[in-house]
Length: 389
Ligand code: CAA
View (cartoon, rainbow, N blue to C red):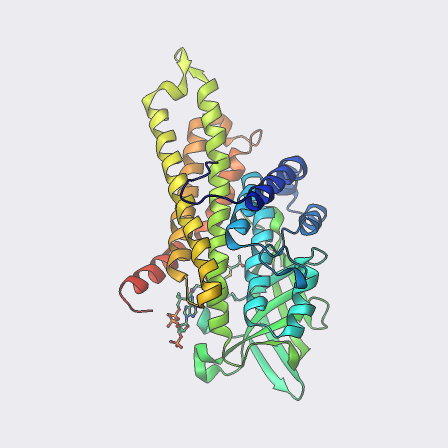
């Protein structure tokens, strides 16, 4: 990657980025295709990533994290995603959707209890918002939490939770007062071994297959009232605030996938000959490479910009929804564009499982869907521009 002069990296940034690159190439690259094929959750490498501090990069050291900034987080995540997007989403969800939310909205005891084991790498966190009948319109959820003395009793069904089959802890959003609609949503922290928390079957899927997504079913699942995150009715705002951070992670995932596909296509275009010359020397291929590279670098700028906006918001408290949504929208659509072109440049080899290019193509698609579809990102951006948010 280019060290863009407008975002000079510190020595600490570079050390973390190099450590993530080294780990990804040595430990993840040799197993990525097999785990994609089997769809098994890569427990051992995920635990090792945790041990290296990759699961809580922005979490302060007193809660087991690496205590670094938002730019450090995207630099490390990009390196993991260049090698395997499934490991990437597991890292993104743990850092952004799980740790970041508790750090921002949790009480001190909650931070110690629920962040420390995840940020220090021993345990895995997950995020459950979506339901079978409530996706982009997240405020319409039906799952219920009812207060009963010193407890809440949770009932319902959440879908699409990455790491759902294996996670040790969940941030879960439930309706506590349906009459209030969005303002009746509340967030909870749930331990994975709580009676009544049932893991549904692993969902078969197109890409990021090793990240093991499943339904999580709540059947009279009783949790202590002290596990409520924030106040009753604050859940929708918590979910949305956390998704702003999550969207920077998914944008970075999209960037990493695109970079891997681009590099494969660039090398192939230099080596593969047709009609007596390398295919890269044909304008039809060369111009494809030019567009791929330009969109990748533009994605990187939007992502670094969003990371800096997030960092600033830690001090000012302001929102960075616009920056996060622009980064996710552009990077995810770039990832689809680049992986599509990379398959085309590889011809029949791009369609074959002998090379990772077809995996990059399958993995890229989800980045346009989860943590807010491209349509939702356009909604957030246009509302912000029109002063409607
Ligand atoms: N930060 C803080 N507050 C926010 C916010 C944000 N980013 N976005 C909205 N809010 C607040 C608003 O200010 C408003 O508060 P007030 O009523 O006090 O003014 C309240 O929330 C409601 O806002 P809206 O009226 O804008 O809400 P809406 O119903 O129109 O929804 C939306 C807005 C952008 C469409 C939102 O519902 C959305 O982002 N939907 C997509 C959900 C999503 O991304 N789901 C993915 C789930 S996770 C996943 O994919 C799996 C995985 O983990 C990988």
